Image (cartoon, rainbow, N blue to C red; front, side):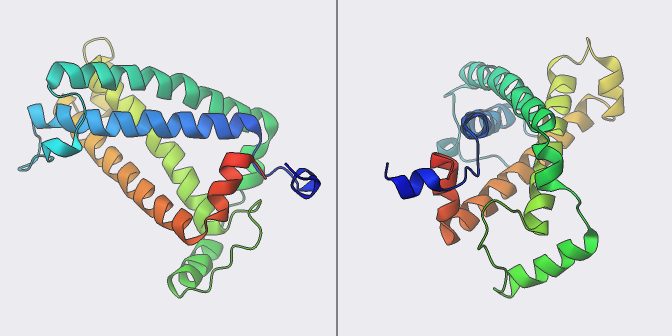
Length: 201
C-alpha cells in the first residue's frame, strides 16, 4: 500500500466493514433459504423457482435459515451498538429532511446526482439505509412471531396473528430484496463505493 493511499481519510472503519459483509452473507443465506421454506407452504398463489433457493428440502432450508438468523441477530446488534456508541448513526443518517429527499430523488432520476464525496451520504441514501435498518428489525420481530408464536403471543398479536405475521415477514423480505438489487446497481454505477467498503478508504 503506497503512502498516498495511507494518507487518505478512513471512510469506513474496520468494524463497519466487517459487520457489513457479515450482514450481507447472513441476509443472502436467509433470503435463499427463506424462499425454500416459503415454497413448503406458500401464502400467495406462486412459488419461488427451486433453483433460486437454498437448503434442498424444508429441513435443510430451516437449518440454513436458523444458522444465518443467529449471525444476523448478533452481528446486526454489534453493528447498531457501534453505530450508536460512535455517533456515526446520527452523523451519517440524520438530519433526514423530506425536501432534501425529494430534491435528491429528482436529481438521481435525471442523472444529475453527484457522488463526489463518498464519506457523505445524500438524502436518498440516508432514507434507504434508515429504511433497511428498520426493515431488518421488522424481519427479526416478524420472524420471532412465526418461529416462537406460542412463546411470544403479544408479538404475534401485534403482527395481526400468525398468518398475518407470515405476510409481514414476506413483504419485509421483498423490500430487502429490492434494496439489495438497487444497492448493487448503484455500486455498479459508482464502483469507488465498493473499493471504499473493502479498503476503508
